[in-house]
Image (cartoon, rainbow over all chains, first blue to last red):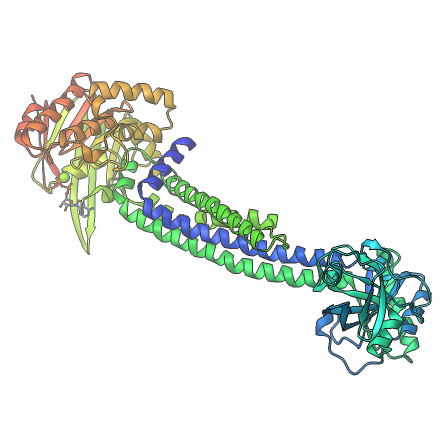
Length: 402
Length: 224
Ligand SMILES: Nc1ncnc2c1ncn2[C@@H]1O[C@H](COP(=O)(O)OP(=O)(O)O)[C@@H](O)[C@H]1O
Ligand SMILES: [Mg+2]
């Protein structure tokens, strides 16, 4: 029996019982589409996080006060005892490491920012000139904070694009004065629009010299220290140096947490991959359910088409040919279901992209291969029993009216 | 060409053995027109199924074209059946979703004959059995007589050694039955071997040889 004839025969069956065919296509399609969409979501989230960290700056090491109990945990979920404060002196000391290129101490607070009659509440960052390079920010106009001794400060500030337009409208902001709390600052630079990056929006911030922020918020304690290693290879060295320098300065206490971007990213990667795999396997179970459905439908078909099978045998069909007829039918249905599922999955993906353009939803290649493959394999496996039963039918019995 | 000797066939019904065939011996030569007659339950169909390799005897030897076929595997039997046997059934038996011409094509498809050759043979068969206008119809759109003509065309598609017809007129009215019978006789006139199972004496009278069966045994074998 030729392949074309087998396909043609199976096609006639598939076309002939439309309701049955649609049911199987639906079951298979839902399974495949579920796998594709779920993995697209997972992969999208993973890529999104990776991009967000990437935009934080390269070779970044973050030092925060307090000891994290679980290594590799996220900054937000730290638990610790009341730690010793991180100070500007700590930050400056870090420059002694040969693996460290730049250091930017950071203080963050909220401030009432006003210019003339307009005002708004903004996050206020106190830092040094090196912040711009570490965070890889770009200037739209003017210049960033001036170099110089961070212990003393000039009354200048750099503002985000949104702040500039809200306080000054279309007027140029450069050279204008604004007030933060009870202090006055002259605008020397406006940041380029950058948008969201890991929850903080640089378009909405005001950056002042560190010493000014210390006075403004009446604290010596740093929120964190951003450190940039000289190269990717030196991140580990820089991290070790940072830990050692701080430990010596803090009387031998390891009371800070040092996070490298790599470690955080790897953790996120692990979590999101595990999540994607778990959910994808749950979705894959729906494929197995579709397989069981195919088996039942085929078993019913063997009973319903008993007479036809008997006839084919009387006309000279071998057992192998009868089995092939059923397998071809199953493969045809599964391929149709898989194709429909891939199409629906792609539709769902592009819909998600429309709704959340920021997240790069994209099913990974292994899911695009595995989902149809599982559909085909389950269909074939679950057809083994019905096909064998059909092939073993006794033609005389099958043809009889009894 | 066909030689049966000492064929036995028993069925187990519950714990009871039913002797459907008892020591049946029969020879059929090429070109014969044979009818198998007898009351219902006398073993006619069982004998025909064994001759057609659809069923196996419990004992005895069956030689087809000088070859012992009693020991062949199921798949080997299927291949021999495909090449040498043409069946015509009382209840027609078609694949209901396929058209008349597609049903006629089935044995050739199973045999893997190439499409060009198939088309040629189909055109010839349709013309020979007057089915050209009905070729694209499905079985449920055909009359009983047309159905049986399609079945005969299908049986002839592989150029078989023998045509086996089990009560081919049993499901037809008298007139249509005559018509189908004359189609089968045409096959015989062209040199084909035809075996018809029937319990109508008139049909038996038209054949050239009658095997009478009773209780699973051949009781008379008469020739004209
Ligand atoms: N598959 C079967 N199982 C049990 N008994 C059967 C089977 N096929 C035939 N028989 C029995 O064998 C005998 C002969 O049957 P059959 O050849 O069909 O007779 P006929 O065709 O002459 O009417 C009958 O008694 C019938 O009941
Ligand atoms: Mg009978």
